[in-house]
Length: 295
Image 1 (cartoon, rainbow, N blue to C red):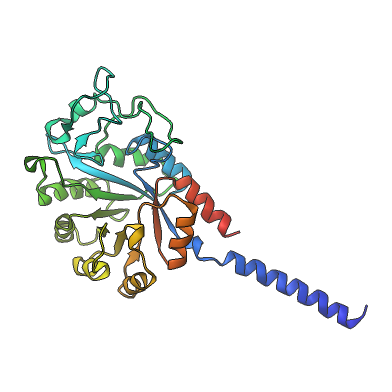
Image 2: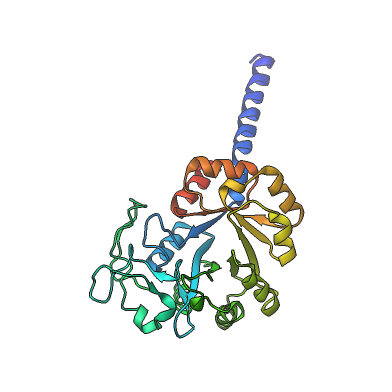
């Protein structure tokens, strides 16, 4: 065979291999997936069925919200009131008024069904009748069902309420959370995040080893504020992301996990800017996208 043919074949193979290697070496492989309220896009939010789907989908973190009940038990709920749009009462009837969760004991909360009503915002979400409010302790116990998987939690403290009297004391609220994380040996597997930096400051004093994340929905000194609180993660709204901001945070040892990204175009945009993680209502779709992007 002509030596030039040998050379051409060699270069073709070399370039082909190099192309495959470059294709695999994309930054998507290091993106952490956070299942927002579990898997809100496909299952009733902040329920065990939603959390189970997020774990099954391969999410790195389950993100959920906490409020306090009347008996000061941390309850998984995004809102301080029982949703009139997503929950049914003990008779399986639609709610006719807002009920502050702080006025209900755990036993009373268990009577509500928050899995039977379809969420019109998420047409792919399937109903799971019988899903009700769960406590943080129940979630931590539930996680033991997956010994072969590392279930990690991103816990958001919700302190706003329709009436001032129902707003929790930040220190008391955080103490109730930290005690449970210690009891179930989940400090190292958890993040505490909040818009209310008072709870993060209390957590820093109570349990310095607990990871903290600052939430932002408005422009501001994101990196500086996060660093001053001793947090190592900042979670701004997608609209606040800029490459310079991300570079600044990275220089301070702060990761960026924006919320809530549900479209492939947004995932690509965020990844190209250099984010470390993505909070999404569709953890299965995101993990599938990240895997396909590394092939």
